[in-house]
Image 1: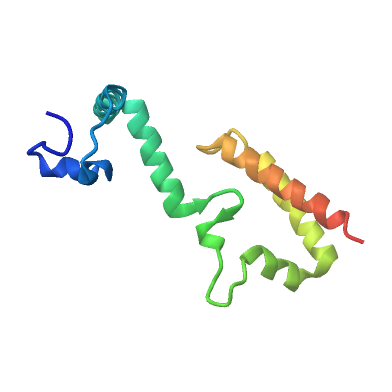
Image 2: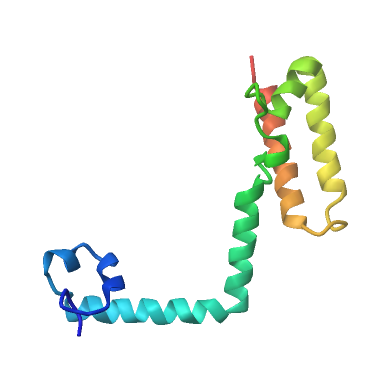
Length: 135
């Protein structure tokens, strides 16, 4: 039985219409069943589980290219890259950025995540272009 007269109280949390006495349409019930089946299938799919684990790790660590958690805001709200620029001045910062581009391109193929290293090299190259274009 589907609808508010169902004895399964846990179903009442699925949709507010259960509490108001409205029934689900046949299409809604069919879709809910398909989604349930898909959810059960995904629980056993190794590729999907690996994706979820990588997503969880990324969320815990932050964006490892643009804002790695280990360089994130400290108590004063300053990111490491901004502190480096302040400490080195514009010319020193340009040299630092050039060095970072070289470093990440140099190590491509030598560490576990080539894509991430390529993205980091590109990030530093973009930052370098941004600083060079400042008036």
